[in-house]
Length: 171
Image 1 (spheres, rainbow, N blue to C red):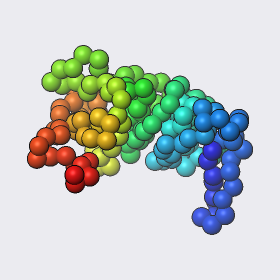
Image 2 (image 1 turned 180 degrees about the vertical axis):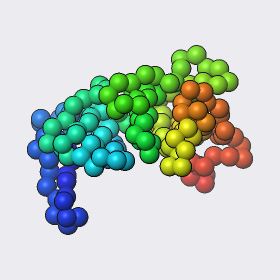
Image 3 (image 1 turned 120 degrees about the horizontal axis):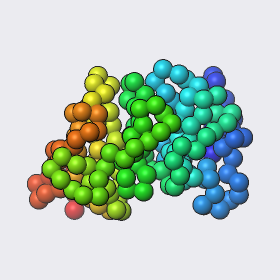
Image 4 (image 1 turned 90 degrees about the horizontal axis):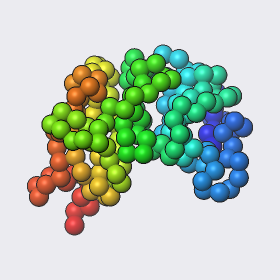
């Protein structure tokens, strides 16, 4: 579940995020990421094992926007969302409806879907058009992608090689 503080010292668990039971598959047993909307502190998004969740009342109630185990997301300065859902990259400009910006067919300008591994996102705080996506293959880097047009097209800007593996443990 999620804990909330209004003074930065005392925290209380939001009853709306209490897991239904102790099963690892129960909603709210895992929260991978949580971020507030950049212009509305009462609007909060959470990547959970039970889906991509949104509250507009500071956490009193939540709405599921996407189902499944959501492992990561990023929100731009204007509120555009990029969400990892089952190996796909989903985008929303209104915080409610989503379209896929990744592709099952890999081209020189597409962001491939990812089967296995991890996906992480970052959006430039200076320019919402610049979006970065890191994909892993297990514990190793698969590739780094960049979009300069808010996710319409992508280019690979790095991939694991003999001389480049930032996730290498030095072995």
